[in-house]
Length: 560
Image (cartoon, rainbow, N blue to C red; front, side, top):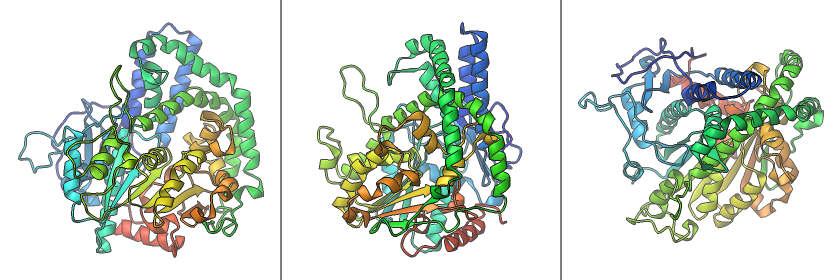
């Protein structure tokens, strides 16, 4: 657990092997957002009751933030001054400035909440101290893409795009990308391949940050800062009031989830029924011997979860809507009056790397799917890995660029709807028989009983919240794709000739398997390996053992 306190930061040289143990770490932009919302509401003419409700809302959010602290892997990233990031590392974990700086140069592209490119500025001196300025990524996206392209050319046969999910602060997303890139590169090196080139698309998906922007800047899907600030007290009261008004239905949903989690049929998984699709069912569907204690704690916290549900539902829904908005901004940014919408970072990245890599300009009048897709004449394949809301960006990529040479498409705990999957994935598989689609899910019981903030907020994974609170489906096809309970009801609706290019893996409750929504893209899972996806010939115990030994050998995780 990281000690989270507030402290001022300044740009300074980072000494080789600087200890990270004494660093006080605010958890990303979430803390900044909490302070910002508090400042804005301090002088607002809201009632005493409204202030108390808002404080409870912030408290619930902060508890969620604290409970999300994870292992540092010898690396700490925290917000600095003036939109910089301070990076501290431990030489004992084989970190050095060269590894960090090379990852920032060649492997990470950051998108801000409006869809614009934001160069990452750090406290590190990446040139060995020859320059008197800390390292910053190139000022323009085109320059950054050119550096990435030069690094890929002639050396790699596969580009792997990794896109994180929602509720991830900027600092956390950057730290995870640094750790994952090091692990993936080392994994490639031990096999003597160096074939795969990872690119991390980091987007602003912090929950409190998203709600703060929605409350004070966004109205009807566009930036209207003056109007939003003036009406923010009304909006806050409406959000909280709507959540309170929904308390009976939220309590009923909590009860329904509780009852369904005890049904024996909830974990039904038949590996033969959906052929020719490959369905990998878990062996352990009951869990460890201490499940009785977990179940007892889960039951005892139910009344508290019902009380906090309105504050997660009321403000949570507009926060969710704004996070969805941010995934869309990554392709088309908000247009100004009378002007075409400018391209977002993700669209510009794909256009410049694959669509117009041999041209100097992009003809936006021609739809991307009608233009050839390749990489400077080289035989390079593309793998897309998305987690949770990251699958929304992946889905839009498939919709806009179905002609690209995809090798694997991996959805982990996908927040994208089944309908979007049906619209965007099959056309890609029809174009290329060698493209394979993987969909990874939790066991339904684990999905239903997942707890956050020490069990004080409504149970269920983010996908449960989406289906029940944030985007209630109008049909079964509007439910989230990442829940196995949803997928198994519609899988036979997918044509058989397409199912042969699909694998659906359901993780169980055995030790080491992902058992919560946020665990899929943990470095401890080695989720970039095909054996994690359930590829032909893979075996979970063997995958887990190999992954553990590899990460320990690289000092990426502590030896247990």
